[in-house]
Image (tube, rainbow over all chains, first blue to last red; front, side):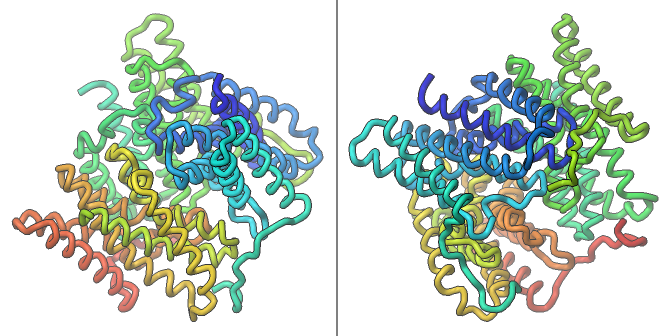
Length: 207
Length: 207
Length: 207
């Protein structure tokens, strides 16, 4: 199994858990859990594969991915009531999923020899779009829009770290690890310590 | 005309009517009706074709589909005021559209010899994504998220029925009919008698 | 540089400005500005390229487009506080972007020799989907849904104008100019004078 496939499996599993948690907040049934879990888990990688014209799409080539999302949905359906805060769990699992999905996108784009700008974007798309679809469909405030939090920024920094470490001549395994660690460190730091970049402030109240 | 093309035509026509009804609830003009009707009608099948790398997309190969959506939009624009409840009509037409779109997706995926998991998902995607786009764009509560209703579950059961009947050695026409009937029976039963699966219930109020 | 590529560049630049303005209304940081600007700027053309199976997607073939969206995002981040009304500026820039994006879509579809219905739709998709994604992600009321305004209708009329002028035997440059002018004139007239088509009116209040 290639590093990219391994990262895809990990991000599918963890994003599926976050999708199922969002489904629990919307009080769906077991099939609804599976639907939202699958959408969240494969959304970012599917868009990446469509844009890069990879054929077949990763989960069509290997339907075992879908087995993973079904299992994750069932797990959450029967155990989420044991959690103290489903939203907090969702946030932290989402940070982990982000930290494996970004290098998954980076690995595929680098493997195709894409230019740096495209590698950056594929890392960000693979990392953020599944969660974005989850939030839009479930009517949650999209995490990418949360004010004063690092989210897209963490994905960007992780992708950039991979490019820099690769340019220094290190092996893919090193650059992908740097990508995952950078992404997760920034996101976790934002969740724990409130790290953020300056946001745009309008003078008068909005509109 | 193949069974899959016939099913595509039927689902395009009926989903277009539901899109136009959603446009009437948003009080758009005739072009807005056509836009939402077309988005709803071809959305699910377009995503299916992109994912399965079918080329060209079904309505680009055969623009007569667009003629159907334009006609449906105009019909609703000029006659919707005669309806007693536009939302109720939308719900029932949507159930019919679901019941033809799911087998349309199943037929294409089976025709490509896809594995069972992919056939299931293509049935569900073709059935649900057009309506999902309609609801997200028009700011309606997505039908896939309605609590205590069978929707994605009906699409899932219909796709599964097709796979089972096919595995028993029956002809495509039989398995696709089983798919349509199962989907519609479950959705209609849910609308009429409130059939549902147990939903996830949190102990404390949401968040 | 072909007329289609030139139009793509212009629409990417102007749509990116509108995306960054929407990000300023959501009070994001600089990376968030770039994310929304890029999504808005390349969204419509990306969907067009996916649907028409153009490969690679225009901004993957030519990552300079991404440089444009990054520049636009930074420009707005540091200067938007100078604007009297960010929403009004967004509306007018959006009208310009629409007027160049519609002919960009029309040019590509005509160049492929697509039938008239497909040319019409590609003009409308390229013109409207980037802004639609911006509005859905940023939780703004989608401009395509604004009651009593010409938006999709302007895109439709512009695409139709291109087809008519082409059918009269004129060169692409003439038909694309007619497309841009028609689109912009209708949209600007709607913003300035309230031009609109009759909208659907329900008798009872909307459920």
